[in-house]
Image (cartoon, rainbow, N blue to C red; front, side, top):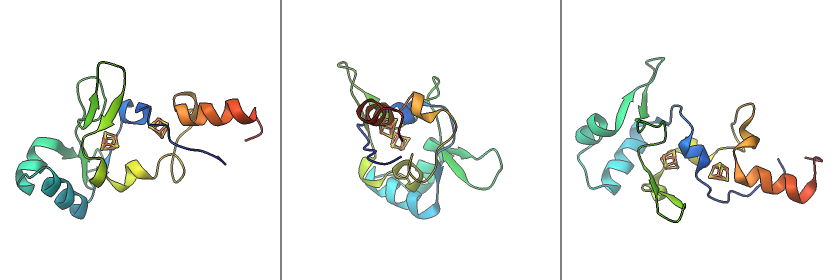
Length: 117
Ligand code: SF4
Ligand code: SF4
């Protein structure tokens, strides 16, 4: 999608689904949180369904454990400076059918350009 810009609505962090974390990402996030790596793994990760790595755990509502919501309806990623590669590459490098319906950045492009995208 041309002219796409993330407007930080946080919806992609609210959708249930795996957020894969590599070993080096775990090291970086644990250091950022000033935690021991093994403690971080135990507290914040789970085995991927295909058992081929680790994913960040979700809150009961399916949103990412590191998504913080404020009372004004805003949201922020608690680990933004060291968030996993998967987070920073959505939606330009990967996405899934129907993502545009929830992504505020995609909706903005559609509003500005009609359905020419
Ligand atoms: S790590 Fe941050 S950017 Fe990635 S899904 Fe969680 S809250 Fe969103
Ligand atoms: S859903 Fe789209 S606009 Fe919202 S935070 Fe994710 S990428 Fe950015």
